[in-house]
Amino acid sequence: KYQFAGLSDISISEDTPVEGEITIPMRSRAREFDSSTLNESVRNTIMRDLKAVGKKFMHVLYPRKSNALLRDWDLWGPLILCVSLALMLQKSSVDGEPGGGPQFAEVFVIIWFGAVTITINSKLLGGNISFFQSLCVLGYCILPLTAAMLICRLVLLAGPGPINFMIRLFVVVVMFAWSVIASTAFLADSQPPNRKALAVYPVFLFYFVISWLILTFTP
Amino acid sequence: MENMDDTSGSSFEDMGELHQRLREEEVDADAAAADEEDGEFLGMKGFKGQLSRQVADQMWQAGKRQASRAFSLYANIDILRPYFDVEPAQVRSRLLESMIPIKMVNFPQKIAGELYGPLMLVFTLVAILLHGMKTSDTIIREGTLMGTAIGTCFGYWLGVSSFIYFLAYLCNAQITMLQMLALLGYGLFGHCIVLFITYNIHLHALFYLFWLLVGGLSTLRMVAVLVSRTVGPTQRLLLCGTLASLHMLFLLYLHFAYHKVVEGILDTLEGPNIPPMQRVPRDIPAALPAAVLPAARLPTTVLNATAKALSVTLKSH
Picture 1: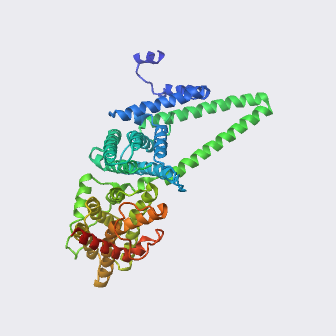
Picture 2: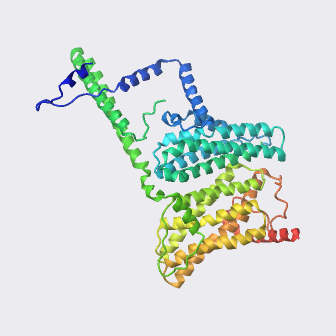
Picture 3: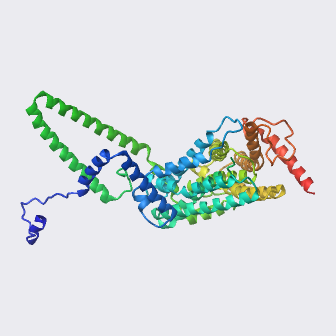
């Protein structure tokens, strides 16, 4: 309250130095935050991170123009999705083939290097999104395609055939469109308005390649 | 999760951060001053503790400074920024112009020096090649084929650009590396169209028609540009002949021999299982190993492809 006491007299004499302090309350709060996360139980930490990841999943499933994905970015969700997708794309080595591993590495590399390439491209086009924010958005928008992979694996249990293929094609196409629309809703705002198409096209190609990997998977 | 490293560039946050840092330094200076007094009071033990703290602090500051300097030096993508300064309308018009040869050879023709269009076209070509694998209905190992597709397309774009740039240097042509990359990249637009159509409609006659028409148009465009920038008939012939043959043969290779590379990989991986598309008679020479560089097998595969095309057309009649 004493800060407002001097407002009644706003004349400043020549020999009074004009200076002051701007206290930022965030700083002390950050200190408390740090010490409290260090002392809390592991369960609390994991549950808090899982809740954040789950909230972002909801944002991806119902894409609205919100800033939540961009503001508090994290890479847990993309990692979980990428690893589960790569695991599901593994072929079982029942025929005694030596290479059960390469698919995992290839899918992992494709997803992460694809996301890095798209991020660099959108930054070069003049977007004002940070590197990790873009990685976060692209990674989270793989969620519909991971769901498509799960459905495809279940459908493939029924045995191959043309109807089987049509169902899988339909599911993958729908999820692919969902992924592209979800990522566009988050990324398009960061570009200058006349260049949105230039930034969205590589995202389209990226999800197309992942959809191709999912559609052509045979166990 | 805290995103203190966020570089979203809000100046308000930056000012806030700066002020925080200044405050922290002040507080640290105060703490150091307080410790000094304590040290004097405690004698040797306090002095040593304060010294070690200061040393650790200085090492941390030095390390942080070095890391941020290295990061700003190597992660500076702003070098490439001017080459991506395009509008969608410009990209569209350049795509269409890459199919229209211009017959002005007395004056150097203008080449747009940008990298967005060519890069996107190379990625599109990769996607179309992968799509072609799907429509062939073969049992696939996604990993190896993905690597082959990316390697083929990027290898062609970068390798042939460099080679033609080297020849242009020998033939005294006025073209820079960036312009050559852009020219060849936009020339891949014709390839994308032809492959997209012929991977979905499997008629060899249709492919040959498109190969001549669309492939020929994009090649003529590039040839015209190069001719306008080169002096002397021998040099023009050398440069443009090389580019035209490489460009047209690449399309032929992608349509026919690329599938052979795929089947070679499948054969070496899967042994005697014959994928369903292998109904036509096998190659005229014995099957070559997939590890052999595909370009070296081009003449035989073209011969085989033509023989196959003839057999298919004969069978359909």
